[in-house]
Amino acid sequence: MLRILGKASSINVRKVLWTCAELGLPFAREDWGSGFQSTWQPEFLALNPNAMVPVLVDADVVLWESNTICRYLAGRYGGGALLPADPAARARVEQWMNWQATELNNAWRYAFMALVRNSPAHGDPAQIAQGIAQWNRAMGILEGQLGKTGAYAAGAAFSLADVVLGLSLNRWLSTPIERPDYPALRAYAELLRLRPACREFCLNGSA
Image 1 (cartoon, helix red, strand yellow):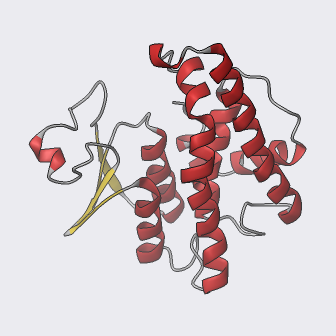
Image 2 (spheres, rainbow, N blue to C red):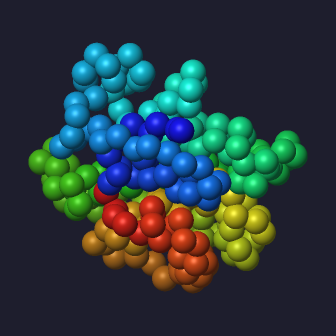
């Protein structure tokens, strides 16, 4: 059985849990991270020297970085269901996964840390306002893409891109900020909510 190390509230752990649920994979999750077992323990650092969750242990395979774990699970167990075998189709999925991990994450970080985490280091009103604007602008890029596909991020079929972006969308919708009216994102959120795995592992928090 798969071992997933990381607390259930972590957005990156939830990516992996949602992927497992979509693929019907049994797993055992262990509580690691803030409020639970410290990721600075030697036992954990031997698995991930970055001291961050999640970590996947699949027999002799040990992986960290949530998007990489999701790719591995889909590639090994998905049979093309969430990550297409065709190089162009796969690249479109991975393009949006990479965008989520780089451009989108950088856009929301300051505003989220200030408004949800109440971080003392993120209290500058000007930077909060700038962060909100950057976040909304980034979500506008996804709005434009969904307007083209009329369905999911990478095309007509649900994919890993929608797992990682669905969690990012939920975070955006759950944070107390002013948001533009993005009709394609509204429709996308409703489409994702039809999936039992989304309701279980995406809509259960914003942190």
